[in-house]
Amino acid sequence: MPASSFLTLRPGPVARLTADLSLAAGAGVLCWYAAVETPADRLAEPGWLAVVAATVISAPLAVRRRWPVSVTVAVAVAATALLGTGIIPDYASPAPLLVVGAALYNVGRHVAGSRGQWTALGASALLLCGVVFGSWFGTRTPESPGLAGMAFTTLVCGASWAVGWTLRERRRHSELTAAQATARAVAEERLRIAREMHDAVGHSLSLIAVKAGVANHVARQRPEEALAALEVIESASRSALAELRRTVGALRTEPVYDVAPTLRDLTGLADRAQAAGVAVDLDVHGSRDLPEPVALAAYRIVQESLTNVVRHAAPATCRVDVLGAVDHLRIEVTDDGRRHPAPAVGGTGLAGMRERVAAHGGTFSAGPRPGGGYAVVATLPYGSPS
Image 1: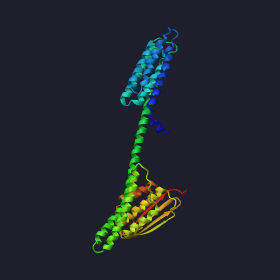
Image 2 (image 1 turned 180 degrees about the vertical axis):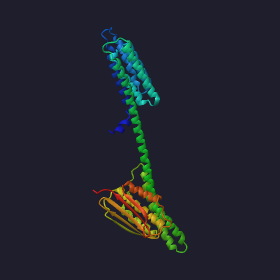
Image 3 (image 1 turned 30 degrees about the vertical axis):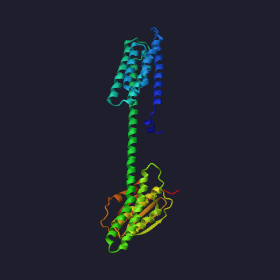
Image 4 (image 1 turned 60 degrees about the horizontal axis):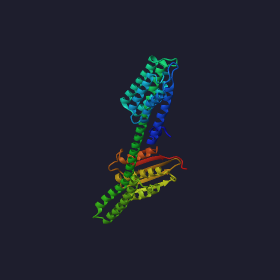
């Protein structure tokens, strides 16, 4: 399991309750064993007192997740009292120390800000006082830890809280990273859909606008040309509607079985551009077995290029060359038309083509030709076909 998945994993209520009860039971047994230890120079304590001591210090751990601060204070007070009164001898202090460490880990894990820090500092200081009182003002024995025990207490308390704090910060960072990745994926998907909508519908709408202007201009003098223009408008409208339905279908939850455009559909683009006054010479070869994303990107690049020719240069002659090599696809669209007006270099269509090419790690160029006209050249690498 990846580290980020482990950090963001949250066990269910039953698993948490089982873990907390097991921890409380284990801590109770450990503290009972520490409480029944009696120095040689002292009388043995009643057995029930060891049971009560173990229960008092370990039972709060069963609700440590619900009240982390209160549990830590209660455990620290109980440990200090047991060590200070000698019920748990100072040389057995690691048992209550581990219980307090578990509570401090829980504070670092679940309590943020200065509240958690002050709780950890106060509990550590309180426990340290219990260790000092038990070692220096209680009944000292050769096994008393002394200064080493104080240093060990400070180290365990600080390390326990620090481990919990570190895991909490790592989980928070993992959740934040996951949320940012989700938001980025949503934004990229929206941009992809917007680009598809622009490329799919913009081409047909450009043809419709051009032919509608022609029909309006010649409706009275040459009705037959107006009828031909209306036929083109009807065909382009149906094509735009089909493209729109296919693209919007990607937003639905049910499966979409429409086939994405391929290079075989370039003939239809050339025919529609021809109807809009652009003579298209289409040459496609060596492009079999292309990956679907590359074929779709090539189709959209040719579509947008022809749209620009129709919109800015018609009537004109345009040549479309699509050449497939072993590891890349080269697309070149050139025309001899005169721009009216010239397309903006940073236009939406050119930006969309540039983004498509960049997504595949290819190269893209677009600009006026030295001898007149305009040229769009794109290279889409894809590796050797299998």
